[in-house]
Amino acid sequence: MNVLVWNCQGAASKVFRRTLKNYLREFKPTVLCLLEPRVSGDNANDICFALGYDEWLRVEAIGFSGGIWVFWKTDIVVQVSNTHPQFVLLRVTEGSNQPWNLSFVYGSPDYILRRQLFTDLSQEGLNFEGPWLSIGDYNSVFEGPQVTWTRGLSSSSFKAARLDRALCNVEWRMLYPDASVTHLPMVSSNHSPLLIKTIKTQGSGVSRNFKYNAAWTSHPGFMNFVKDKWNIDEGLEQAKMELANDLLSWNHSTFGSIFQRKKRVLVRIEGVQKALANRPRSDLIKLNKKLQKELEEILNQEELYWFQKSREDWIASGDRNTRFYHAATAAKKANSRITTLRNNRDEWLTSDEEILNHITDFFTNLYTEDMRESRQIGWRRSFPTLLEADRDYVNAPFSALEVKEACFDMAPCKALGPDGYHAGFY
Image (tube, rainbow, N blue to C red; front, side, top):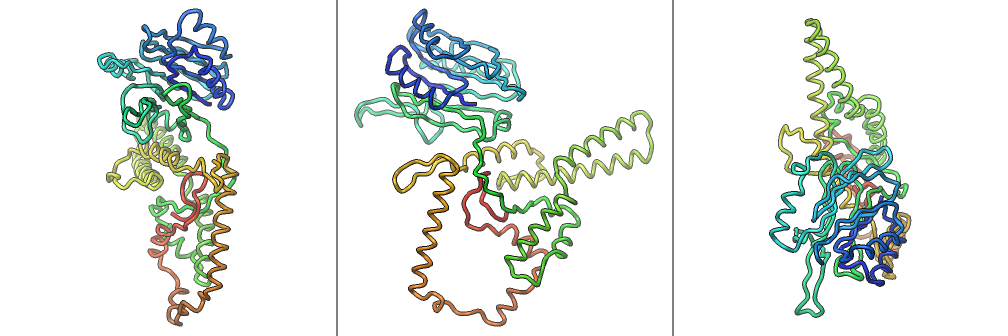
């Protein structure tokens, strides 16, 4: 689903409508919002009809300031929850997905009215819950690296700020972890249109490499398993590969899914406690205590899992706030994903296949050139050979602790995978 939001600063001009129709053809937004259209009455109705959307609503401007037009297609179900001079609040449902809240905002240039906006635009004030995405021109400068508004015709009078943005709460970010916001070029207005994409882009089909799971170390049989499976008769790379395959099988057959085990234990605890409420028995009391301890271990494993993925260095000991780490992981993945690359001909590559081919060709050519140069300088004569004692050390078996530390340290220099993380060991 695509959402396009634009402070057009006047929707009556032919230049604006020509530009808007181009954006509609290119991005096909399911929901369109125009801010500060500066048109009302029959003229506004004619423009709305011409855009070809199934449904729309308008909050009329007060004089020449403000105004919010919202259009949507019948592919989704939209309920109008609240209208306000400075915002519109909608309830959006896409098929069988969880409903979420969507607000479009035009903050008044007047400071007093804008303060009232931030008072009125809150979940407590509007009395709603759940995922929430809020987009628009807040007329307030938040922290951020890119501008969305400019003014001035010369360097001395030029001004710029980031007035337009999309904000969401943790619930919405977890509902759409791959969502993105793009600032489109400023055309026919001195505000950038905002394009929000909620649908995950198709991956490139590259298989994911093995990733070490820090939660495995909490299992009592993990270290012995590593000792038994480490092949001292193989070279380092082959031994690592075999151990990785064995760990994946062990994870499936023995360790299991943390989240499924947590669900099963919670169900068992609920059943035992219901039985205890009806008829207290010593065996049920012992079982309840055992399940409580098992749940504590699972929660610790879950904490390790999300901590490893979110890569936060300041985790508080004993903190079970895994919901935050889940959201942090989703945000980090979205920010680190490579979505566009520019090739040597100054052309922007946007598809996953084009980006993958470009990266592959670049490094293939790079290392081919390096190998040619290395042959010319005779690099093999530039390095000493290993002593016999060094060879014995390299081929010596690793202790379980060394294997564990090596798993954390191994991070080969490879391109980012489709999930935004380095391919290789963690």
